[in-house]
Length: 326
Image (cartoon, rainbow, N blue to C red; front, side, top):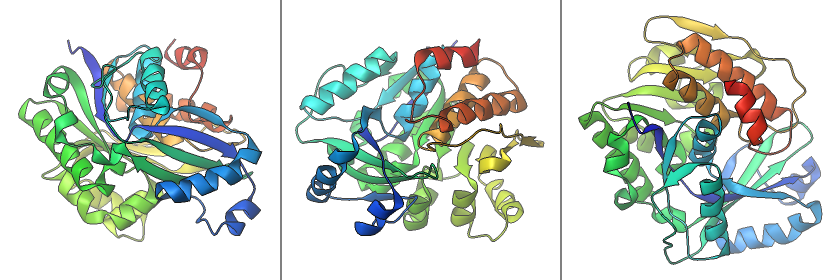
């Protein structure tokens, strides 16, 4: 039996989430609904304006949110990341530890500045992100733990890492280690902006194929350059043995290697979509690790996502995670 259900690597970002209005985005010429990479000065200027909206803070980054879900539901996970020797870096590591996620850092910091992601949520529940990667942009194969991968059930790769040459190299190194040791590989496309602008990087990351892909409908169409989801699925089958594509209010579609399975959505009032895809992936992989079928894991993931979009913030509380796995 593997020590870890899921090994993952990704950008270590302190999420700072704010409830704003559409006018704020328009006034600041911010593209709505996508992740935009910014430098430290741009982010600092935006933070000064967002202070008036209050906000919440938590350890984040897409893969981190996924692994926190796995551990909080009762599974086990390991995260390779990079933070700086600063207040937010220590906050990040402490938050991971409290969530039960093992980490390559072990309290040892690097120089530089810890990355931050400003998550702006509008009344329609759409999330818009401005990200300064900080020292996380230097994540490299050096941070990849071969030992942890070899002792995991799934090696999970974060798509956001394709925005950095060293991050992309880390993803590729992790995939190659996993494949060499017969560990299943999983990849999340992460964000439509990233898929659109770093298409070739994803192709390099995928290499000769992966075991499991997570994406939403927009990302699937963007990467495959198809006009219909059916055509996109046909292309995805050529490089992913299995996949789960979320379809918003229409639920999701899952492929278990043989059969396409429709996963029903749960009807809720959406408040904040931030973290929904991350939790879907975490609950899905947790389900697989517990021996669930793809349909059962998909239904669990759909239920989890419906809970998180109905509240503010990218994570559930511990009681909510545990109720899902009960």
